[in-house]
Length: 296
Image (cartoon, rainbow, N blue to C red; front, side, top):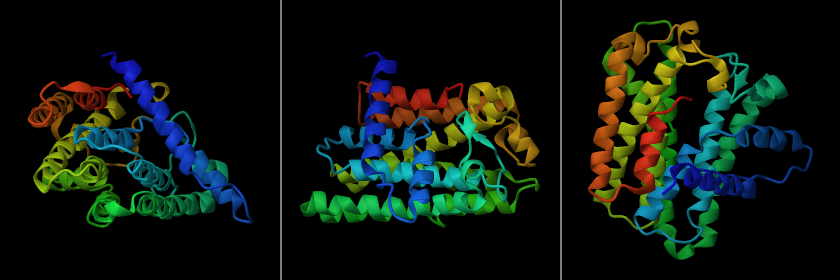
C-alpha cells in the first residue's frame, strides 16, 4: 500500500462530498453561503471525516449513509476554527496559508459564518434519515454523539476553560481536561459515529472512543510542539501564538522532550488497541501515525 497515494484519494473523495453538501449560494443572505464555502473549502487534513469513514469501513459499513455525517463533522470543526481566529479569541489573520474568514468578510460575517456552519452541520446530518429511513435508530444515536461531543460537555466546554484560563498557569489535570474536550472530543465523535452507523456494538464503539481520545491528545501535544519548532511557512498559520496568548501548553508544562515522549506513548497505546480489532494494521493505523508524527 502506498499510503500517500491512498491518503490523497481519500482527500479528493472528501472534498467532493463537502462540495456536494454545501448550500446553494442564492438569496439576500448569499454572502453567508460564500463565507461558509470560503471557510470549509480552505483545505486542511480532513482528519475527522477521514477517520469517520475509515471507522465505518472497519466495521463493515456500506453505502452513502456516512456522507452527510462526514460533511457535518468537518463543518463543525471548521466553524470552531473560524471562531477561534476571531479578534476576541486568538486574533489570527492567517490559516492554512491564506487570510482568515473574518479578515476577508469582516468580523460580523466571521461570527455569522461560524454560526451558520454549526447549524447547517446538523441540517446536513439529518439528511441521513431520508436516505436510509430504516436505520433511523442508528442515525439518532450518531446525532446524539455528534451533539454531545461538540457541545458544553465536549469541544465548547474545552474551549471555554481554555479561554477563561488564558494567561493563568494551569495544572496538568486542567490542561488534560482542555485537550480532551477541545481537541479529542470531535475526533472521538468521528470514530464513534463511523462505528455506530456501521452497526458496531456498544463495546466496540467504546473502544473506538478510547483510541480516538489517545490520538486526540497526542495530536494536540504535537500541535504544541510544532508551535515552538516549526515556521509560519510550513504550518500555514502563525507560530509562537501560544506564547503570544500566554497559554500553558504541554511544552511549557513538561518541556519539549517529555512532550515528544508523551506523543509516542499515547500513539503506541492507540495502535495497540486498534490491532485488537484490525490485526493487519492497514490504512487506518498508518493514518493515526501520520496525523501524530507530522510536520504541519
